[in-house]
Length: 115
Length: 111
Image (cartoon, rainbow over all chains, first blue to last red):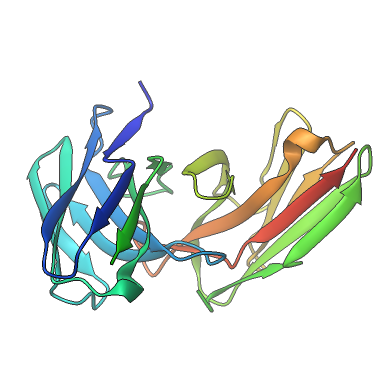
């Protein structure tokens, strides 16, 4: 199983709503990532979790709140978003090798629209 | 990211032609990856290169890594319409788990 599963595939939310994006992998990977991708742009790194602890936050606004409840799950809690936050949100996972590159597997993404 | 320069930005080729996409890093590379993405979909992993001089192939796609130049090239031989999509190079920069992408190359293959 080399799959990273993201739910939902599509999400429309109002600016006052609270919603969550979910990501799941069963490859035993101990690094998990959230990326944001705007149209015609490459994915931008948001957060990295290593061994269920937040290791990298790329200065993401606090209206995005990540959570890693266990080694297989990664959530992204959304609150008071702005229309400019509309984008494709991608989750990825990889092994945590101390040396050497880590192949990252990506989910299909959640297409988020903020209205 | 500005740390990874990818060229060209877009490419239109006739079916059967060969093509090359380049990716250059301004930072130390801890691994170089190539992905393919269809619009609005997730990324499909193509290849990972780690060592200088390394070359990998998958079907008609070959990627090479020049560690000294901090550069990688992706070469498609005898392109087909199924090769169309956006090709992204990615690299672990600063450390093995801080992963960034180039700006992408949009490839169209005309039948």
